[in-house]
Length: 410
Image 1 (cartoon, rainbow, N blue to C red):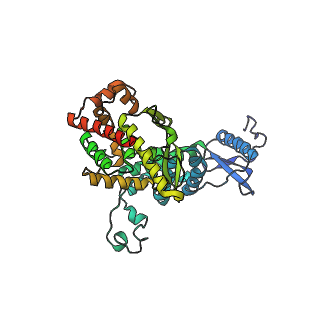
Image 2: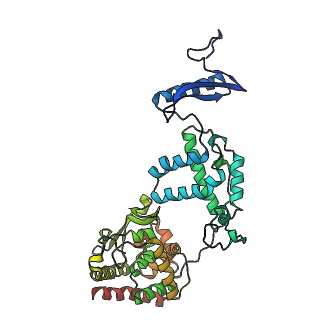
């Protein structure tokens, strides 16, 4: 600092007036091994002096980047060094997808420290109105164009929720850039995307669920037990396909949700569930026990039929050769079974909303249902139990469980 005498402090020869403030530099070694000047700027000499001291300390610790990267360059490093090591594989894949499809094409060429609120707002507005088939040249990549490249835009505009998610990924990346002191403010956090109106879902009634399960049972569907776990216990697709016999205790009537199977970056990944709250040991109602007993018997028959072609694993749900089920195939088989059962087509994930009503119909004690539904208060469970189905439906479901039990013991 310059004292009362006007003299510079020791080693401050490189701090000098610049534009409307001050600047300074220090010699650093770049990651490529070259010696270069790195500059810092500020409105006051004191501010620059602090930055200059910090820069010297940084230079002593190791290589220093001298040029500010573009947003695309920074995002590639962020995905590689922060997202992939710290987040679950499926989440990391989703982040990378948003960067590849939406963020990099629209903003990637901007310099990280020059990105403005206006840039982000214009990007959001463009996304909300831009056909992604045109933007990503999806139709042009086909052997025979049939929409956008043929002159008839299909108007494949991303949903408001997709745009919200893309903006959230950008905000997360810029938050990390602030932590690394590459930028001083998060411009993505200053741009809001209005929430879309929630789509009202219409899950199956207990009667429709019963009709579906009866049809799957009558057809000896190898995925019947999977459908029971999804509808009665609220299992997610990945949790069902990732289930191993090690986590099933039929004697104690318990099942542990611990692993999930997902296709990530073109390979099947058997990994822990997304959160600790997802991991739990649940009591098995009778219909689940009998369905799993039957599944065990069917798997043994498949193993005998496959002979040397059988792939050994501990998965509960496997193909006829013992390999794990492909997640997308599971969705297709669910849709096909729904059509054959004559019930409305719904999203696989929406079956979770029928779970509580089915437990009530199966005469599962509210305290047990509370544990299965992961409710923290019994009052919430009892709210579900007020919607009681018809007596005929209750009898049919109970009969279904007992019927399966007899089948499994044959």
